[in-house]
Image 1 (tube, rainbow, N blue to C red):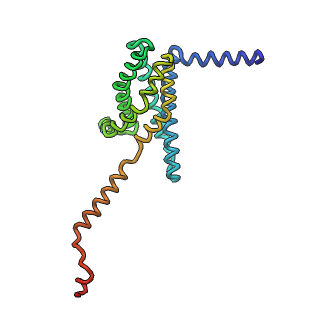
Image 2 (cartoon, helix red, strand yellow; image 1 turned 90 degrees about the vertical axis):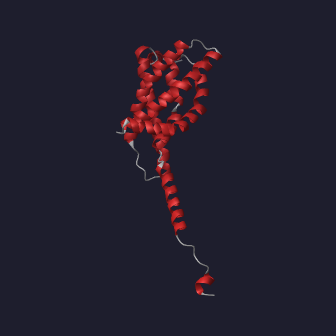
Image 3 (cartoon, rainbow, N blue to C red; image 1 turned 30 degrees about the vertical axis):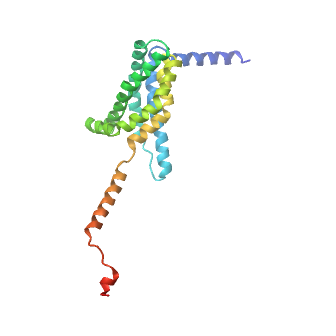
Length: 220
């Protein structure tokens, strides 16, 4: 049995926790959880990068940009799921499948574009540059998205209360956020540089005259 003071403390914690998922606090919770998990995903990705290259310096500005972009995506998800639950009411399997398909066809590519454009702007680049990056990486991003989110959203729409949707998504996206950080910040220039070097070597080799056999050189 807990003492009276302990019971009162547990009740207060429980009441404070419930407030985070009610009214205007729900929007704040969804916003901060989106930024926090995207930043944590970037920290994990940078830890992997540092493990491969110990000389690499952790970029806290990059993590900060991920946090800001994640926070900006929180309200979008908040109002998107509110509309989706009003448009498709109920927990029938057919209704849930419709929600998942609409979410995949509309929300997923839109949020992907939001992410790349937002990160590009935060890095001081133009919207056109962010659009080019999004277009170059879209199919890689979208194919991975289909491997992860339909199953996750089936659980979300079938089992969870609407007030927990965004926090659920933000929580299970830790692995996905790590992937987004990798996709955004990976160095795509090195393979092309290696290919260019190899191509240049091939051109130089073809340009050189064929070497004569040793017997021919020596006059035998």
